[in-house]
Image (cartoon, rainbow, N blue to C red; front, side, top):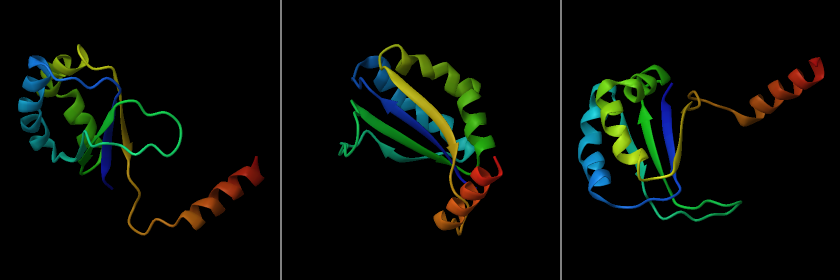
Length: 115
């Protein structure tokens, strides 16, 4: 099942460190099968507050996503971004093929009944 890394960049800004980070990040992703799905698009906020922008990466699975984030190559460049951009980052699983939200609702309903 694919896994994703999402970063909410609340204060995106461009400077030499951030440019160096951008120039080097692709090489850290490749050994782990990671790829960009979104990078800094203009966002259309429909609910709540969302200052800044978003980055979404896809990996073959959660293990590869964690291995990338924890890798020496990525940890070496990470401060180039974190020193300058206030952000939150998360890693999460996608849904399996054939995901059915109705079936998920039934499972949640059953769990609530059992409690």
